[in-house]
Image (cartoon, rainbow, N blue to C red; front, side, top):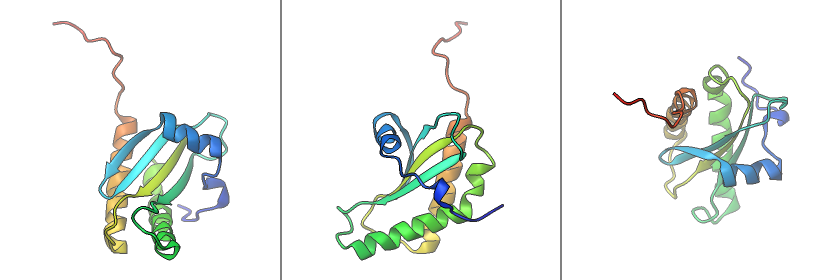
Length: 134
């Protein structure tokens, strides 16, 4: 597995980010949240991911940048959990949503749990909306 985080895996498109916030689904593992939506089939990458840390919780850019760096690093080291279990291309936004200053190890553990929860959610069969009567 390649542990790189190249530019073509970074989510930069404003239209895609807007689509994530308007139509995306989310999965959470406190204090992390992952908002996702399925990307178009002709996407060159299987997964595109962006990270965000709220200015509400960390007023100083130095602190926000630190946690963004940690989120990118935990994604980079654990992205095999996503790549091995995802068939369609997805766009993801990865959020740190607390003012608590967790350690790298705690964030890494939560990231693994969040990715496993995400994979379980996208791989579970969807309800067709009709129930068979007994």
